[in-house]
Length: 159
Image (tube, rainbow, N blue to C red; front, side, top):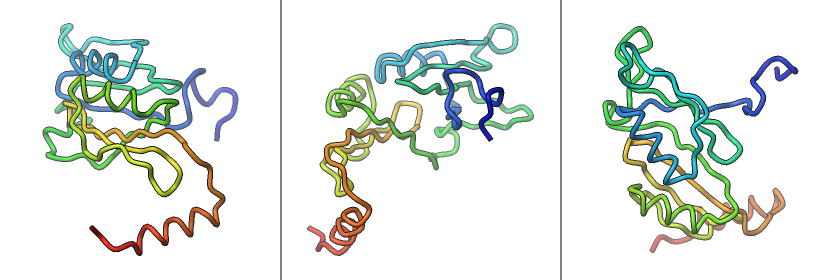
């Protein structure tokens, strides 16, 4: 599936493609909130909007475009009233990135905490309706330890 010619150099096998209402504003936001670096950006018809853009965040590329109503019928989360996808960032310092994202306009969807599976973990929602989870590995667990921790977590009394 991933031979030498099957994907562009520098891209992973799966690449997220985000649809937003204002791609230019989103690109600026992702640069400031997540350290994104714009790689390529193609203007829409008559130079209006963004037809297609690629941004590197960490070691991955995220593709971004403006919402369209043409043959693709791509809709932004704002238009749908929800999103069914969470983008996950594994980083060296989740506390710093989480606070940077919030300072730049993300809303906290789940505060940072030390999760049972060994990550320091939290979630934010960006101003364009996309959900981003992020974490830093703080301890490694064997599969057996992970199953025990999950059972304990699921069976713990709620507060």
